[in-house]
Each structure stands twice: as structure tokens, then as C-alpha cells.
Image 1 (cartoon, rainbow, N blue to C red):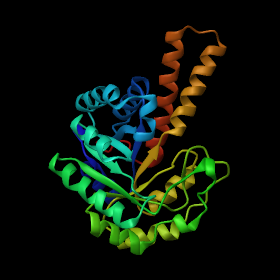
Image 2 (tube, rainbow, N blue to C red; image 1 turned 45 degrees about the vertical axis):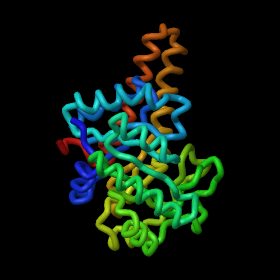
Image 3 (cartoon, helix red, strand yellow; image 1 turned 90 degrees about the vertical axis):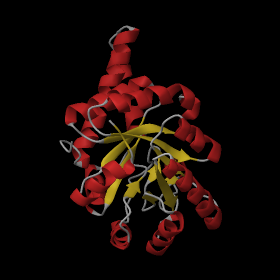
Length: 278
């Protein structure tokens, strides 16, 4: 069933678990995500990000993602992650996405607030929710996850939510997008301070590559939404490589890709504590 962030994150926050976002650039990944969620009775979030559109164009993937969410027997949020342009965010809403993340975190604060506030106004008219970001989640390829000047402070988190009206807030506490070059160190004290100061559900980006304890500690500290993509790609690669090494045909290779991604998602759903929540 089609849902938005408010439908799933408030319960996660109240009951101390997290809902996983799994970006899906094709119907193989989409199938894996739907089957994993239904088999475990987990609420789930899936969609795509603006930087991933070269690998799965929005107008091509959106009808499949939205249709799958509507058919699902569990709550499914269709989320447009890291929207960088107003035009693409509007396109996602018109295509039926129920949630938008506008990421203005690398720009001027006032510009970020102004653009995010406008996205919030329009998205809410569609019945969709909005996630924003303050502080900046880095890129593992640049090894900038340890730059504390990019981390979110409690004061700016509170001000940003008040200024924009976002429904969820992505915070920077030491994670990064992509494959880590070395083990990240999460600032859990900072996370707890932000959680204490805000009722708005908090989001952790750059989840791929974190340890099980990192996930558990982040959820205990107040994270209600976890973002995963790179781990799915790595799982799919492993499944395909093994099947190819065994001399399997194309369709078998494809099915092994789906199976491997699905197993990776189920492992995360269990770790996040979202199993049997619906």
C-alpha cells in the first residue's frame, strides 16, 4: 500500500526501530525490495536519487515503482532521494512519488531554507512528505566523513526544521555516501543531543558499510530512517559473478542477482527492527 514518511516514521520513532530506504534503479532491485518487505512484514521505503538517474531514468522507473508500492501488502513509501533541482523534484511528485528529499545542504543556508520551504509547500499539497538535510553527509571517495565542520549541530537542526517545516531531517554525524575507505566513527553524543531537541524523525544517510553495532547504536540514539544503496549493488554483483563463474545462462544470472539483493535487504530489515511491524 502506498504511504508517505509520516505514515511509517512516527511509529518507528516511538517504538525504537528504523525503516529502511533502498534505492532501486531497475525492476530487478525493485522486485528484491518488494519481496523482502512482504516476506518479513516490514514497512519499507524505496525509490531513486537524482544522481542515479543516468542508470535508471525517472520517467522509466517511476511507473513500476509506484505500481509496485500500490500492490504491496505492506506500507511502501516511494521516495525521491537527494533531489538537487526544483524541476526534478516536481517531476517526481507528478509521477506519483509520495516523498521528496530536497538536498540543499552544500549551499548557502538561506538559499537552502528558501528552496526547501517551497518544496514543502508544494509537496504537502500533493499529500507527500519532505525530508531535508542540514549539515552535510560527505562522500566516502573523498574521505570527508571525519570533517566535523560538516556535522549537524543541535542548534542548526532545530532552526532548520522551524524555518522549513520538513517532515524528516537527515543529519550528518560521521557517515558518508559510497564505499568507505576506512571504518567510520559515528558521533552518537551529537545524535542524542539532536534527538532530544527535536520531535522530527531523523534520517541517517551513508548506511552501506556500517557495522551491525553502528546501526543498532544509531537507532538507539534516535534514527528512524536508514538509507542503503551501495550494499545492494555489491550484493547484486556477488550474485551475478557467482552465477557467471558457474556458467549459468543470462536469466539464471538475473535471478541470482535478485536473490542476492533480496537477502541483503532482509538482513538489513531484521537489523533495523522493522520485521513484523505490519
